[in-house]
Length: 261
View 1 (cartoon, rainbow, N blue to C red):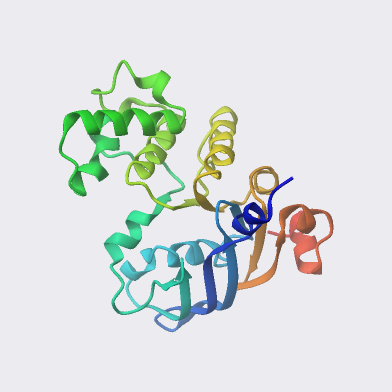
View 2: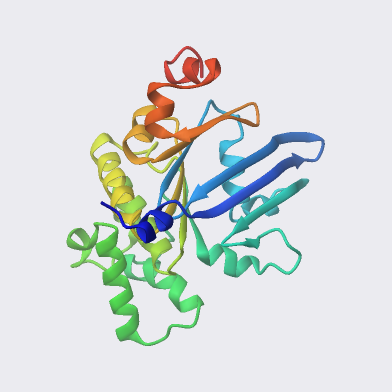
């Protein structure tokens, strides 16, 4: 049984979105989003294509800032700090909030250099330290045993599933607190998908993870809470087991049961 301290930690809100609206020029992509995302927890964002879930995910590390015509209203707090405040250091934010994309995007360099890239950018120069980081992160990404004898060969020679785990190792190397995953297994085969899901379940002990997925079964397997997005709005947000067995909204029930989307 968890102690009171552990219970408080398990239920601690790390990310809070308050009245978030997102626009791309005249098009409104998100409407009045309010979500509390728990620390050391996996939160899934589900919904049909174009419903706003990836847009919301990218508000959490300000990736949308790079899109022409983007404008956000409302507040997003991470650890109590408003990340849309004028003084926010976006480079530091993105170090703390790592991202894994839908398709693996390893850099065209060696396996070793992919993982060492972030630490080098942030000032780590000693080879011994870099060696330790590379091994630790490849182990965390369940890739070390597969690549330890070819660290200095091109990452482009890895399979798709291995590349996605390498990208995850690269994210872990800069020691983020939060990992965003935008359909990280949608381009992978079932065996690689299972490995990614196993990693998510292991990593939640040390990281806060937010995952966008179209796969209902995946959301059920890996997440503790799920938010259902539709037409730029959050229709329902609840514990995953509750949402999948007893959704409050007819729209949620229809989507989960496959009647649309």
